[in-house]
Amino acid sequence: MNNTNQPQAVKSARLLLFAFLAFSCGQSQVSAAPARPNIILILADDLGYGDVQCYNPQRGKIPTPNLDQLASQGMRFTDAHTSSGVCSPTRYTLLTGRYHWRTSLQAGIVGYLGRPLIAPDRLTLAGLLKQHGYRTAAIGKWHLGWDWAITPAQRPLFAGFGGKAGGGGEVTTSVSDAHRAAWKEVYAKPIGGGPITRGFDTYFGTDVPNWPPYCFIENDRTVGTPTELLAPARLAKNQASIQGPALKDWALETILPALTDRACAVIERGAKQAEPFFLYMPLTSPHTPLAVNKEWQGKSGLGDYADLVMETDATVGRVLAALEKSGAADKTLVIFTSDNGCAPYIGVKEMEAKGHFPSGPLRGYKADAWEGGHRVPFIVRWPGVVKPGSRCDQLVMQADFMATFADVLGTKLPPTAGEDSFSLLPLLRGEDKVIREHAISHGSSGLASLRQGQWKFIAGPAGGGFGGVAAPKDNSPRAQLYDLATDLGETKNLAAEKPELVAELTAVMDKLVSEGRSTPGAKQANDVPVNWKRFLTADPANKKAQPKKAKE
Image (cartoon, rainbow, N blue to C red; front, side, top):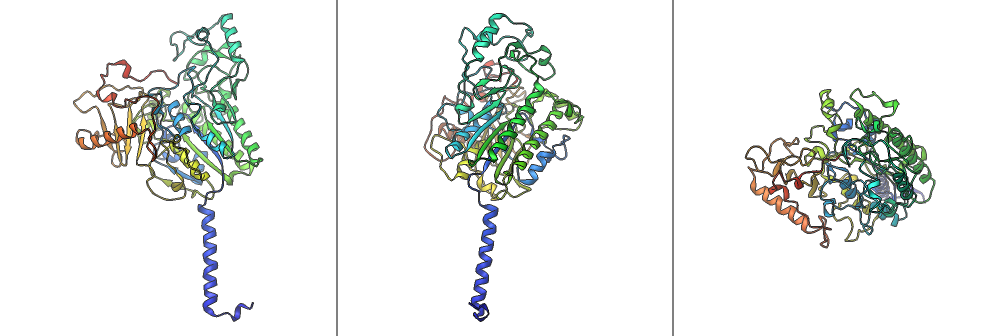
């Protein structure tokens, strides 16, 4: 057909149609979620909000070029939170989409030799993705409990050796034949209740790098049999915390490079397979042990912790480089975040004196219910979906991964999964809208804080972290109320001025607790009764109300 003989109106209509179709195709390439992308979720340990340069350009002195580049390639969230200021509860919430305080973990962390916190029938991110054909791998720090094959009679042979936590007192330097016999027997058996029983096909890590056993664990077995006690010198200067069984000549510095090697291998292998892969990489750093490898020692000029932050940034760079080399980067969703704020005991005041503030503009540090305890870096890169160099100021939580992944897969969660999870997908696609009305984060003592819009309500005095929950010295109320829109540093407690708002937020908290969920759906049961008001009336001298002092 000769187009020159067509009427002008027809030709114009065709041109408009072609333009529309071209525009629509272009739009779909930008905003449509690819079917079943690979997913890499990297969780740093104790990395503060202000430790990443792009989050703290004025008062951050640690170079983090790889994380800054990742942010420039994706979306940086500025109001992202963990469910707790410490490790285990955050990990539970991240992997299940359910607040940790709905379980038996009402304060503190899963202790040394603690039982599994995630119930066997609880759906995890890995379990969800596995249902949809993903290969799933966890590499790094688990710290959610195991079913060690240790009898009650054997238990004393695995603990009580001294150290900064889990025993205290003078460090033991020698052990008996009975100790070694028990270790040989137990470490030869499979370890139940770990990652490969909670949705992961494979696992490699150290569980808790500064706690025994000082060896790697692969799937459900120790790699080698610990026969010695860790060298006492490795329990000083923010290294290991608990003395206990170790491989001969175990070196703490080897942990992070080994995890990185394994992660790169998973990516290389996964990129060649037909099925998509999910890599959950909970790093052991920059948490203690501050075992910095020679290449990074002294690089920051701010001390061991800052050096380890730089090494952690380089680790992320290695993982991303492996992804790029594999050819799978364009079809991979990458998430980077941290489990809580920077630990105050690693030399925070010395760093601040040199101009580096690990919590940035926020009050508090690791373990606190104040923002510095649980507001964390949160970066998402997803080629073709997330606009490079974008920023989102909406309130989000790590609990939201469960609903987000389900949304990406086009599936619905059952009523008993992701009870506190909201999908981030609209935000990732560029919409600027409220996806969650509330967010609940706890201090290590169990002190609860509730966000509702600009308002932050803390159900007790002080930060509820390592500083405790002692009552204020003046006559101010035990509760705290802050307007984060005008007072991000939580400097002015408005609870006495706005009792009606305190009452309203108290009622909201009551409802979120009693319903067993914060998302729409059928009411669910908490695992145990939740007494979230205990610090509003508790006697500060009551030791049961105080946080555990043991450090991870």
